[in-house]
Image 1 (tube, helix red, strand yellow):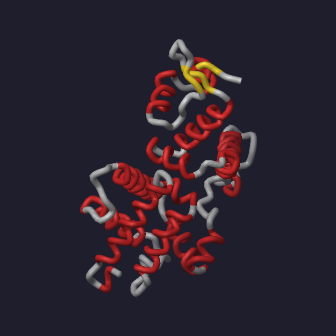
Image 2 (cartoon, rainbow, N blue to C red):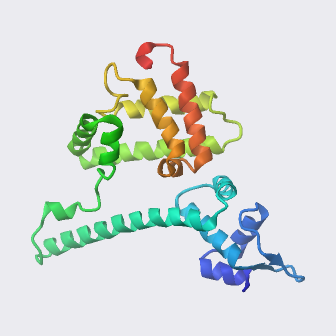
Image 3 (cartoon, helix red, strand yellow):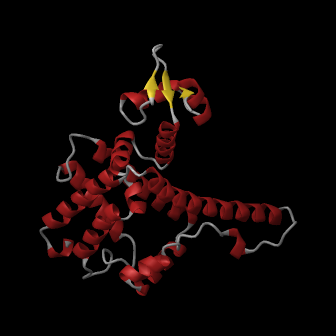
Length: 258
């Protein structure tokens, strides 16, 4: 089967102009162009478009998406991984919805307010086992106590700083003139290490902790773990972050900085 560009734009909730742009940059080429100049899309092109739209929702830029599509040619395998991430997010949102509904019912007198229910789905401890395995139970306990001890405003400020750092990394990785060892990237690396140092329980925050080993391990994990790679726009973006962090810690002159 084939669909016209207008049909696909309507079905996908996008525009013909966007689809033409995707064609121009080679992200989603049509299956054929008719004698009238119209673009037509077959089932394979639709699958590719679905992947692009899913990756866009993760916040990835088109250059990163193009790289991912080139590296991951097996559509079913790539979509299976993405489906798993979507289901995790679906479960988290469903739990949050139920928690908010419970609070509304309690405020309107239909239910008894229960703290255990109010915060379901807002769990920042979902990676507890992984953290304990990598850095020990004490590291998790201290960072967990620190996080729970913050006010909501403090948590929001911390999340805002983390998000801005993530966006700045992505922008730097996409800029052709910025290399991992450039002053701009090294300033980001300095900010990143400073951010890590602000999290109690981590080797970066502990006096005499193995900062170099910790940052090096995280840097490589950003690339090898798709969850972290997605945070930085995909494998290429995460590789940029890794290389910049490794250059930063290797250039540190003071043992205290290491």
